[in-house]
Structure formats: C-alpha cells, structure tokens
Amino acid sequence: MTEKPVLTPGNKTDADQPVVFVAPDKAFQTIEGIGGAFTEAAAATLYKLGEASQKKVLEAYFDPVGGNGYSLCRTHIQSCDFALGNYAYVEPGDMELKTFSIDHDRQALLPMIKAARHYGNEPFKLFASPWSPPGWMKTTGIMNKGGKLKPGCRDAWAQCYVKYIQAYEQEGVPIWGITVQNEPAAIQTWDSCEYTAEEERDFVRDHLGPALAKAGLGHVKIMIWDHNRDILLQRAYPVYADPAASKYVWGTAFHWYGADKFENLNLHHDAWPDKALLFSEGCQEAGPHIGDWKLGERYARSMINDFNRWSTGWTDWNLLLDKTGGPNHVGNYCSAPIIADTEKNELLFQNSYYYIGHFSRFVRPGDKRILCATSSDDIEATAFINPDGKTTAIAMNRTDTIRLFCINLAGIETTATLPANSIGTYLIETAQGI
Image 1 (cartoon, rainbow, N blue to C red):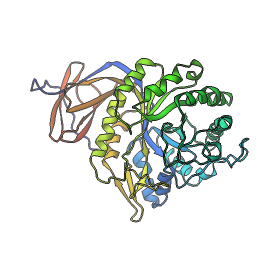
Image 2 (cartoon, rainbow, N blue to C red):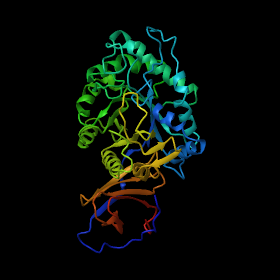
Image 3 (cartoon, rainbow, N blue to C red):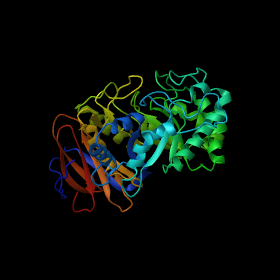
C-alpha cells in the first residue's frame, strides 16, 4: 500500500491504449460499508497472541488512518463452523426463553468486537447471521447437518433474534442488521438449517418481521437469502412477490461460493430497485493458502463486479485465523487476510488484506458508486464519489504484463500504469491531478 506521485492531465499517446472512463455526474447506489467478520475462531486466535500483536491486528483492520478502516462487519448468532464447538443461547425445551443468555459470547467474541469499536470516529456497522437454531428447535434435534425449524418453534426462534439484539445493545454493541439464515439451501456438516424460499418468506412475514416491529426494532435491517449469487433471483422472487413479507425486508445478502453469475445482481436490481444488495461472505476455502497471490485478485474481482452491479456493501469472512486456517470445529479450514502464527506470536499479512484495503480505505459509508467503464478486458475498474465531490477510481490488472492505460474523467485524460498482477486506487480531487 504505497502512495505514488501525483499524475497530471495529458492526452494518451496511443490510440489503442485502454481507457477507464469515469463520469462523476452519474451516481448510483450509496455505500453502506466494507469489512469482515468477527467469529469465535478469530477472537480465540486473537487472544492467543501477545498484547502488542492483538493491537496490531485491530489497528490493521479498524484504524481509519494507518489501517483498512473497516466500516461494515458481520458476526454469528450462536455457533457457526468457525466456533470452537456447537453452542446455543437457550437451554433445551425452554420455549419461554427464560434461560436466554449470551454469556458464551462474552468469553472472547464480544471482547474482540468491543475492542475494535474503539478505533475511528464512527464505529463500524454490525450485522449478524444465525447458522442454526438450537438443536431442540429443529426437526433433526441437532445444530449440525441441516434439518428444519419446527413449525411450533417459529415464534420462539423469532424472539431469540429480538433478545439477541437487545442483549448486544445492552453490551454497547448495536446491531445494524440481521440475515434470516446463513446459507439456507445447504445441508452442511456444521451448524446449518434449511429453508425453502417460501419457508423463509413465511417466517419473515408471520414471525420475525412482526417480532422485531413489536419490540421497537423495526430499524434493524432484515436481509434474506445470505447464500450464493447463482440462484439469488429464484430465492428472492417469492419473498418480494408477497407484499406482507416484502415490507419487512431491506434487501438480499449473497456469497460467492457458487457460479459467479454477477449478472444476477443486475437482474435483481432491475426487478426490485427498492431492495438493497449486500455481499455478506466470501473467503478462500480449503486451507490457509499462505502466500498465494491469487487470493487478493479473487477478492478485488468480486468487489469490482459486485459494486458495479448494485451491491451496497461487502464483507469478508474471518478477520483472523491461525496457520491451519482454523480453529474450526468441523475441519472446514479456510484462509483469512491476516494469519497468525500463535506459537511464534507473528502475524502473516496475506495480499488479500491489501487488495481489500484498496477499497475499504478509500470507499467510505455515504459514498456513491458512479459511472465507470473500461475499454479492455485486461483492466477491471469501478469508481465512487464522496459527499464532498472527490472521486475515487480503483483499477486492477490481472494479466502477467504491465498495462498502460488512460483515465478519462469526463473528458480530462491522464495516463497511468499498472504493473503485472496489481491494483491501483486513484484519488481524483481536482482536474489538475490524480
């Protein structure tokens, strides 16, 4: 992350030179934020490090000057695969939720979230997702390996969201939004719960939406789906086709683990322009992949395409993992932008950390995406404008050769260079320099 000399206007020297065209007067969606996820695995790894290393991790992610300035983050309701084991907030059979407690989260997860909130003038927004209801509320009796929410437990489960939001607010951690269910179309070996689109619609319409509204929590954003882009449209359609359900839903959350299908985001916006889109999870699966340069390029490619197709926010998965890509209570090891060698008390910054930083450091909540187009497949780009009228353009070169290109800001041309396999952020403050 190195600042380069100011670029000055000048006509391109080659008629075939690729162009990144930016038009600040054509603005689109407002950005909610960019960040990553607090998990029990991340917190447990953090607190195995020395205090100086702990501080370095939090500053690297949340300091708005020296770090990535994360502004939108996610966490899990009850346990997930990146927890140390299955756990629920309510004891078996307690339909009245008298035993509801977030004490487990107070061990490591909440302390990490609270510590991160001290950085910056405006704390990040936080949304939360359940991986599974308590096992006794499900048809299978266990939290892992899918199963469905029992019809007779729908009201009690909806009230768990209410109590969770209230409990976190009492801890000084407001919840900005929730998703109904993480990956509702997947039967995972870890914490998971299946919903059809119609079941999710009915749960929101008849239970979750009314429960939040009655508790005075109607301001909390409800997001459906929270799974891959591939079948996003067929999952959203039954919910938004029902006005009684749709009125409770702010938007659709999505992941990247299936086919790319970026065009489905455009189609979603065409069909429901009043509903937001938000990328809620992505990571490199199957191990830590330490030192793999392709990690960062995968992130940036998704971010460019998702923002260009109406996503209002983008959240990575685990903020921190150990050298195994865990801990993970079912062996689903993955990568993270920062890997910790807890035995040596060392931090291994992956290139994905810096690629994400090209977005999160310069694209802030309240910015708007603006019209941006490239003339070559070799250059991928997106652009934003902040409330003060300053423009940020981000361009990536995933080829193995250097690429000279022209930034055309509404007719003002500036030549720039991207080395092989690189990304650049261009802060356009005036017509005199970039």
